[in-house]
Length: 427
Ligand SMILES: C[S@@+](CC[C@H](N)C(=O)[O-])C[C@H]1O[C@@H](n2cnc3c(N)ncnc32)[C@H](O)[C@@H]1O
Image (cartoon, rainbow, N blue to C red; front, top):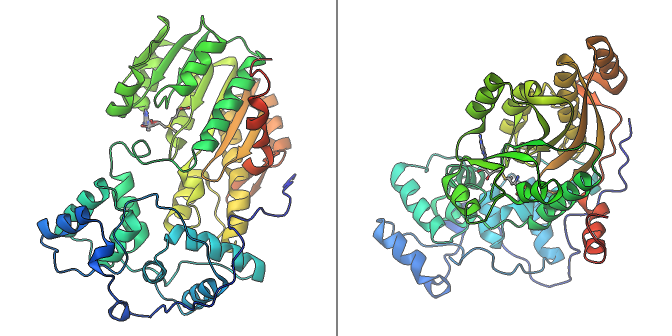
């Protein structure tokens, strides 16, 4: 297998010197409240209105996307010992006034260096306090721009529980939330364009099953202006945004869940030269159904979405087992994240082979929050498809590991975006 990965690029910036030694207590009661003057009045009035006016914030209640401050060595060492002492990550985050995801990445890196396993086990705040009046107040605070982890610290609820409830519960999850990974998305669009522009397959019919606001749909239109494109987007607001653009007459937009749409397409006998499955979280259901919609030669673009990025959380690992078979609890987080995309693609290969398809990988990229695969599918005899699968995938850990995959990290390919501004995309 070609796990051609250079030494892992660090998520984190180097530490600076400093004399401060922050105090991270082991219980909330020992955490000093911050002066109310450090809090945005909007959040204080929401708390008041919801009957939580007496809560004393332990972090300054300020809006999302404030500038990060540099870590110092002392601060990180205090953070690391608190983690070793099994203090909850929500409490550590509150004591340091830092986003817990940043803390986790930093701890992951450090544990990696020391060759010890990072875990969140035993460091959760639990969700006992997540009760209806809290939920209602939390939603208002979140909508007004207070980060989920600060809300978690106000109500002493596990920050991941709060994040999940507030982000994923939103019908427009992933849209209004500002996307810190926008640059990855730009690169995805760049590769979409570059691959289509090579015209290895003439695209007459395309199905953009997770169309969003239509950026990829627009790329397909640009490269193949005569294509008949079906773009499906389930979120109403996003769909409405997409409709502010002028689309070719041969492009049809549908504001619906793509699963029933796929079923209808099968009944209509439609087949596509290009199908793009680009979910925020997962497309495992769509992948099961996609085969009857592909022409005998077709592009299949697939994103291994949020389920990848968060697979170091144990409940997500269980979901991965259920969806893709891959099950290895002995792997530490670093190794798990490293190889799980190979098992995702192995599962796609298994489905492909069961449906008499083989594929070649045009490209694959490991982004910070997802992995993306650009595949060229080809219909084969059952025997040829089976043999192809045996050559390319190995049963392991309850799943199938795809062997012949070059999966560079975004950091290794991002220069392409800079080069793009100097050359034409469609050369
Ligand atoms: C990552 S975004 C798509 C971005 C788009 N492909 C692009 O390149 O700009 C995923 C989109 O899929 C939509 N979505 C999620 N589940 C869906 C479903 N079951 N059916 C249709 N759309 C869905 C989301 O609302 C979101 O807009």
